[in-house]
Length: 156
Image 1 (cartoon, rainbow, N blue to C red):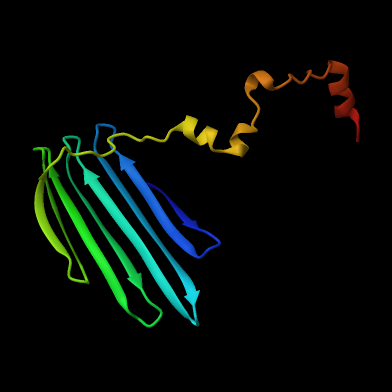
Image 2 (cartoon, rainbow, N blue to C red; image 1 turned 90 degrees about the horizontal axis):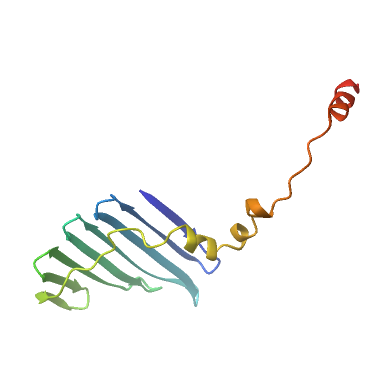
C-alpha cells in the first residue's frame, strides 16, 4: 500500500493512499480532518472514504463526514455503496440528525482501475524535478590526462 501523511500550517491533517493490482482491482482511501480555535475552545471536522473493487467492478465505497463543536456537540453522516456489476447500485446511509436512506439506483459502476497520476504528472508539478538537467544538457567533464593522475597520486 502506498500512501502519504500530511499536516499543513492551518492545523489541517490528512492521509490518503491506494493500491492497484494491475488487473483492474483497486483499493483507495482518504482521511482528512481539521481543527481551529474558536472563542477559547476547539472546533473539529473531517471526512473519510474508502473503496475496494475487484477487476470485475464488484466492490464497496463507504465514508463518513463529521463535526464536533467547542462545547462537545457532535454530528456525523455515514454512507455506503455496494456495486455488483449489474448496473444497479445499492446506496445507503444515515446521519446523527435523523437522515437515512437505503435505495437501489440504476447506474453504472465507476472506479479507477489503474493509477491516473504518473511520472509526467509528477514532473509537471515539481519545480525541483524539472530543475534536474537532462542527460543531453550535461556537459561532459574531460577526463584527466595520465600525467595529471600521476601528479595527484605522488602528492603527500
